[in-house]
Every structure is written in C-alpha cells, then in structure tokens.
Image 1: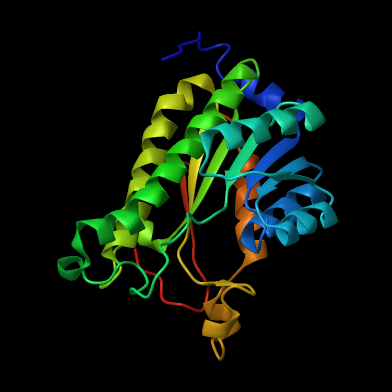
Image 2: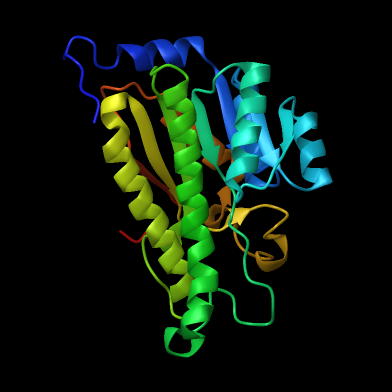
Length: 259
C-alpha cells in the first residue's frame, strides 16, 4: 500500500480533478448514455463503450467519443481505454453503468428459487455480474495508476439487490452482493493512492425505454429518473480526497424506503 507524508496526501488528486476533465463510461444505451451526456454537458471529455451500432451512434450524438468493445473482455476493454487516452488524455473518472449479460432461455428472471435453480443456474446469474465488476475495477485502477499517480474516481453502478435478496432472485442478488464486496474492498485498497472508489446503488426501477413496458401506470414519483443517477455520478466525481463517499444509495421519493 502506498503511503505519503500528511502534507502531500490529496494534493495529486485535487490537481488531477482540476486538470483532467476526461471520463470513460461503460454503456451507452439508456442509463449509460444519460450519464455520458450529462458529463459532456458538465464539461467533461467523454468516451463511452458500447457494442451495438445504434448505441454507438447515440454516443456520437451526445458529443462523446464512441468506442466499440465488449466490456467483459479484458483485452478489448484495455484497448478502448488506450484509444480514449489517445483522444482525450488520461481519464480522471471511470463509470460502469452496464448490466452483465443475462442467460438466454426460458428460465425465470433472477435464477428462480435457490432450491430449484441448481448450481449451474446460480452460476449463470451470479458469476457474470461479479466477474464484469472485477474486470472494470482492475482496468480502471490500472489506467489511473499508469497516468502518473494523480488519483481519480471509479464509480460502479448497481441495483437494490446489492442490499437485499428477493425470493426467486437469489442468484442475481448474489452477483450484486459480490459487486458490493468487490467495490468496498477496492475502495479500502486504493484510498492511500488518492483513488476514490464508490458504489452507486440505485434502489429503484429506473424510468427508461428499457422499463417502459413494465412500469405502465406506475406513479412518476415511484420511479428514478436517469438524470437523478447521472447527478449522483457527478456528485461522487466532484468530491475531494478529504471527504469521500464510498457507497451512495438513490431511492425514489414516492416509494417506500427500506434501510
């Protein structure tokens, strides 16, 4: 673990966040696109990773650099980071707003009852989520370190399943809980390097084209807006090293809050 004299701790981080307004966002469809667009409006030079042609086109429309890559592939993700650095300079902010690929087939969403899912059923819903988070943290931390030790911010977005499991969705919740544990560990490991790692838990359904069919009739106050999540990302990115939030939970005003 890196140690520094008390008089210098945080100075590199502060300098980095004022001089390098460059962000790297995983995801461009729906939430990821909204986060990328919000950061562009805030003055960041933004690169966003996606796979589909329509998502990449949306990135370009937002005024961001569109990079085609598979966020579950280490080589592709590392290449995308290098391409972003070549265009915008080293990033000071990394955001992971994607959901890991979910199993195909006719099984229940979330894996179904634990007693009936089988080991492979649990693995298919849990492992991809945890593995993709671990890869994101590793690539982001490596990029920030290689940029010269000036600190930076890493934000992992996840859902309310990171806080509690629901019947029939234990396997999915296990992946989200693993994400929470990985982020918490990385936050402790990287603090002394002035790298701020934060988990942003969106404990709600997000209003978007992706959820439109299952939120018909739901009061607006019971849903989180994508802009609310984007604002939370900006808040985390704007914190200075002397006061850091490592876990932030966003909930809708009209829904019941569960501690």
